Image (tube, rainbow, N blue to C red):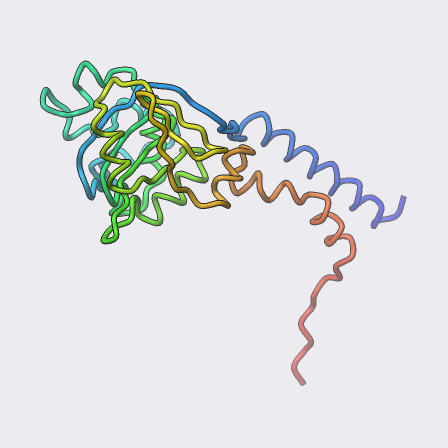
Length: 225
């Protein structure tokens, strides 16, 4: 067997192995609909250091962050510590949620605390989320929805403990018999529905990548005269 044939065999086997390991270990679950209780955190500009304090970012494991969510602001008067908020899986927040420094740990903490989605307030003056937090959430499979002031008022006004259903394909939230329409980037929406993070999106193109690599010549810069 020639070198090219051997290289091609090992390359294809490696791609299949990587795809299989990814599917078993790292792949996100597709998000279609979710029904659960809401927890209302009526605050704007909640930064990532409030979500997960920086001193906990030195852990080498990706687990154990749920119990640290909002660690430094927990207490009797905190919204998520109220009886009605216990067991909630949809977090309702104000504007510009997740601002501050970039840390994927903030998304992990929210997910590991049991939340499947976050719904924020979007106004003409402020987005619902910071850009980096938005991308980190998409890559970790955390659904972020945005509502305008009127519809956000309906959702938040229902209060913690109220059951709601989020339908991602139709971009709706149903609560107390009312249907609200939330905004989400179309590319992120499609990726969440399919359960694809950045790695998963890349692996969709395995065949095209392998085909290109077989045809592509090794590039060697020309020597300078």
